[in-house]
Structures are given as C-alpha cells and as structure tokens.
Image (cartoon, rainbow, N blue to C red; front, side, top):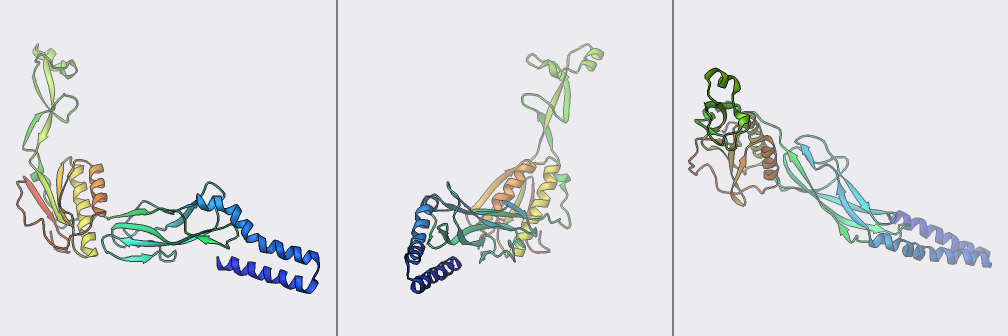
Length: 308
C-alpha cells in the first residue's frame, strides 16, 4: 500500500513542478486532475469495499508430517480491490501460536487442530491509496490427522469373539445363520428350498447376530505433543483392527471437558471419533485408567514409548 502512495505522491510532485515551471492552463488542469484522482478512486471503489469479505483458504484435512499451505482469499460483489492481511495459526494440542509463513508452511509435525484467523486485515481502493478494515473476516480449521502407530506387543483380539448368537431382527442377510422349521409369519425369502425338498418340511435359514460383551478402549487425552501423537496413532491403529474384524467398541476418554464416551461400529465412526478428539482440549490432571468398568474386554492406550 505504501508503494502505491509513494508512486502517487511522486506523480503529484511532478505535476506540481510542471505547473511551477510551465505556468499555463494545461499544467493547472493536470495538477487539479491529479489531486482529484484519489477521491474519484475512493468513490468508485466504495461499493466493492462495503461488500468485501476475507477468509483463509486451504485444505481441511492433512496427515501428520504432510506438507501443506494456506492463502488469503478476498471476494466482493464487484471487481475485487487490493487487500492484505496476516494469517495466525493456533495449535490445539501444543498451545503454540504463530504467524503463517509461505517459507515454513503449515506446522504438521504433530497431530491436532490448527485454527487459522486473520489479523491486520486491510482492503484498499482500486489505486491502493486508502485502506479500511474489512467488514467480514472468516476463520478456518485444519485437522492434522495422526499416522497409525502399531502396538508392540499387539493385543490378542481373539478374546473379543462373540460369546453367543441371537436371531437378527427383521431377517435379511447374515454371515452366520441357523436352520429351523418354518413358523407362521416367516418370510418365504428365507426358505431353504433344497433342504425343504430333502426333508419334506419347510425349513428356514435364520440369520444370526453376534452377542458380545462391552469391548472398551480407554485413553487419557493428556501429555506432551509427542505422547499425544503416539496415543492418537495407537488409537487409530487398534481401532482399525477392531473395525476390520467387525468388532464394535466404545471409547472412554478423559479430556479437559471431563469423561467422554464415543461408540464406534465402523471405519467411518472411527474416523469421526478421531476427528472429534483432534478438536478437544487436553486434560491437565485426572485419569480414566483409575476407573473400574464392567467390560468384557478392556484395553488402555498409553502415550509413553513403552506404556500400554
């Protein structure tokens, strides 16, 4: 902006010298026009300035360690005037705040949430001579997702196998089923026709659902950034193993907001749960490990290199 002002003042000084040296009506007209140009620019730019909005642009999700960059976007109902501003980054897990630099890029060495805000924002007239704060400034949140960290030794998931089976409500498809005689109300789609032909009785293939006890994962959302990286990575790795084997489980976590419970039954549920935790505030004190739960299988995820 100061560059535009210096250029204008230089041109104005030249017009003034031209008037002093020449002294005719043409030099006077040129000087008057030069004096009026800033106000004409402001008048023409005013509709664009009043409808101007500014917001950060960039990715919504990144993986830990993945390079990324953001930028400043401006929009208006009219041709966009010049604008400028600084982007400030705040990392939820580390608590660090810094100004964004294109040379450094986004800080993705740790997982967590990065909040992006705009400061020192200015929108100018079309010539860049007048500057005003924009009426609308947006914000942005970027989630830096963890990288799966394998557990060593890996927990034995055979104990999570179903203890019993029950008929699936409403019928339908099931990987496991039992055969029984037809009862009034059963769907004809479930009739096992080959077995019916052999036995002479209507036989039904009834789908079954597994009955498991509570499978529980506990974790304290606390510790330094390195410990939180390991916890979130271990949670992602173990959660994926459980969902791949169709084992639903529940997360019990201690955060700054207290004890939280998140049910997980699929890969999509796991991804949503991890994204939710990335936006939480770590706890300073307290532990979920000291609590006793009536769980069929329970595993605590620690953050130290040798803690499980």
